[in-house]
Length: 206
Length: 206
DNA sequence: TTACTTACTTACCGACCGTTAAGTAAGTAA
DNA sequence: TTACTTACTTAACGGTCGGTAAGTAAGTAA
Image (cartoon, rainbow over all chains, first blue to last red; front, side):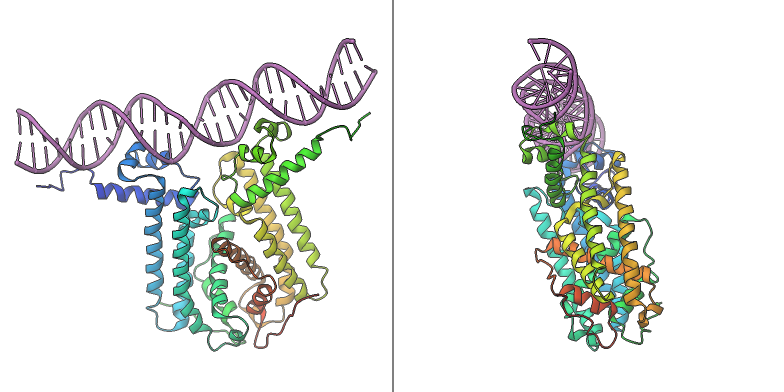
């Protein structure tokens, strides 16, 4: 029989370790900034061992993206558990920023043109971003509905401005090393985007 | 004497060509995505010829940044020629977005960690970004001064949100290939950021 | 015990990286 | 003409890249 305990390294376990380590490296240094040797070294295994588990660098990157984007989607879904629209959006902003801070360069790196074999990764990222935007937009619409701004800016652009703002903050923050204050900034973003004259939308949620 | 006309390639002329070509390439593919061979090939000269004019890749990149950032600063300075604060800011936003579109990956690429010899480039970029932020902030303050928001969000964060928003839009736009509509978007950004109940701040400027 | 699979390792491949050494044709200065 | 400088070229360097071929120790199945 297959005695799990005596096996020192199971296929699945090692794959998981590789992805976890690669995720940290790619998030920090970007796709071009991380070599297969870097990954292997961090794992204390040989470079070719990586090719036992994956077909190549591209596949590893793809699996890392799978994991990360799944986590982001989950995080967004959870924000919908909050009670009011405002609280939902507030939490979504906070979690998005938190996420973006951890995975700094993972996606950003891919905006750079890549060699042909990596086009499908690009496609995959674009798809994922579209999905994310689509999941945010209804929420923006809700919060946004009864404001006067709705006559000037449609909710799609508004969503775009919101995600843009968040991405931009993350970009800026990766230059200067000040961390975004997740206690305050989400509220302030909401004030800026959605407040009219009076703006006492939100405290923190418990 | 020095007969300029018979000389086929003058030092300065060639340097200028190299920088111009390198600028286009770095803007499109980022620092790591462009090799010295790429640059040389586009110029129809040999790779070592580049080392006659520059000490290395780093210096070329630095000169490209010099040129580009000077252009951006000039463009910002020109925005201050407009008459009202609103028009100034409107034009600044438009020009910033236009600029960012052209130089997509030039600066973004540098958010990725670089090898030690390139640290100074990073430093240089950070400095430049700080300068730019400082030049925008007073304008934000002006437009922002008599709005209620000023009590909730300070002008520094507001500036940060503005540049963040613009950078984020550019980032997003580099994923999907839709161009930003420079006729409309700047006004809409201003509406979102600065409008209170009534928002008829701006048409276009002639 | 024997045959086979799993999970690696060592050694190496060709391509390309940024960079340098050495040579050279053309132009300039005396 | 001679000596020198300018603006390159060809050839090659050591290093690293992503990827592969071949061998191997340990575990499993009969």
